[in-house]
Length: 257
Image 1 (cartoon, one colour):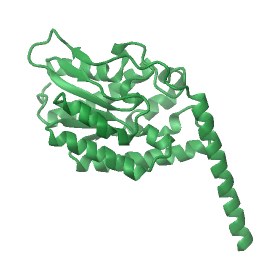
Image 2 (tube, helix red, strand yellow; image 1 turned 30 degrees about the horizontal axis):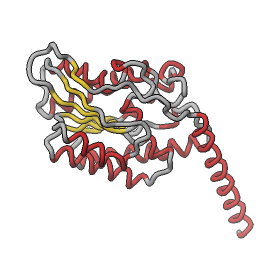
Image 3 (cartoon, helix red, strand yellow; image 1 turned 180 degrees about the vertical axis):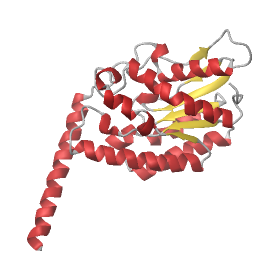
């Protein structure tokens, strides 16, 4: 029994060493963001009538549009443009999201967003919490707190929960397996926190993963870690129906729109 236990401990220790080494390797493969994403803030649909809806995009590099080459390719502008068309009124976009953000950074992002009195907030966060081995329960609580603060200010909140990170090409087993387990656990915890705080979760693992798994060459950018412009367009496409449904349920959009 002692020999068996020792063997198990040795295997586990070896696996941990491999995972740590792989994680450091991924950090070397995935380049640091040398150039910020295109600035997305501003008025969308200025020729449309009526007062603008104010929308804010919070979260990490995914929310900020890292990998997009032009403003119109960022996730915020894609969703803002679609929302303006459906609402028939302009959308004023504010984007305090930034590359490298973790769930704990939402506190400062929410504070910045609330200065603009947003009508709608969309949050994409969690990937960095998974890959940097942050405590996931705390990460989910940070998200729930952010949603609660926005809701208390009268803002409607939609959250794209963490996708299953097994789709990232740089990840190899056993790190890929661990990232998959952690990201799926975080997505479930995020869903519970968002719903409890009065927000609307969008299950990105269910809606988005199949497209990235089927065509990673087109969906990922050159670093094989962040989406390409095509990947952001697909993300906007899968997020739009649940986003519009949530805003209709909240009375922001007419039910026939």
